[in-house]
Length: 347
Image 1: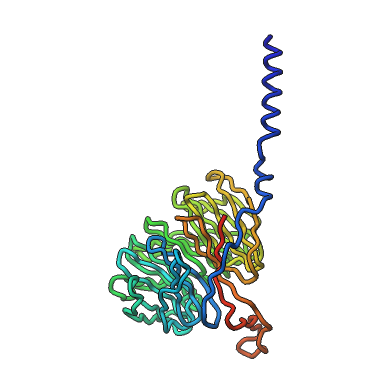
Image 2: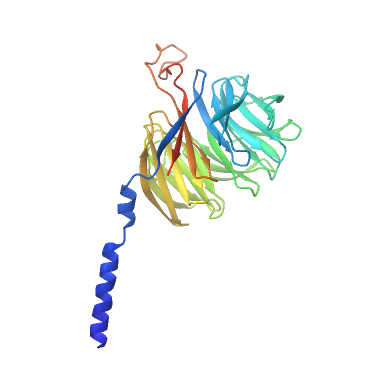
């Protein structure tokens, strides 16, 4: 009787397993896709996009200005002007202020989060501020200075530069952990550094090999995991406390943005080739690529609205590059007028 019952139980388990959808089969079906596009006027290149989750707004950097989009209506509700060579936007909602990093004249524009009025213009001694991030613990805004291999700390309340820290490498994206540490990718060193935001000192320097030329960076604050998107089509996962290599995953070509959705335990890599790599955090030690969604060529940077799980990726249509010059021996492709847009990607 025991053998017959065991055999029957085994048969039932095999039948149930055969009928249950496997993880790989469900991943084969497209999940994330472009549901619509938000056209935005104006010419020129773009860089980072930033979601204000509470205010339901999207900040889109666009050459010499920042366009503000209402996430509920997809309509343009603000335009922050005179930000030459703008790269990023940092938000300090506790102070009601926003900050832009203007690479062309090495300044930071301070604006009001409600009215978008310009409050201040901060001049940096360091060159070419690229990414920018706010740390609420220290009350400072940090610019990642690509032309000086450093980070500058600005008192977000007063607008005074508190100091500049050399990083011995060209900084790219940065994320704060909410505990007084800022993590920064160093693109030319293939390293990640941890900065004490209150002391403005270097805490750790960790290698990202086999990852090369890291750009996009995201953080899972709960499980203390850092996600670095690298140019050789790898996403490297590090332990945020020890720098230990946790995982290495394959992503698309041309990554410049990485985002983490804590509500759904998903990591996104936006790839300029025209794809979005979607990775599931199975647990703190294991990660799975569940999908490579089709986007559009040029969609390299990313912003996530964790409230809805929606991803925003800007792009445009491209024409031939201008003739090379001594200053620009390898010019980028030109952007066709009137083609700039933000892709809205959902599951």
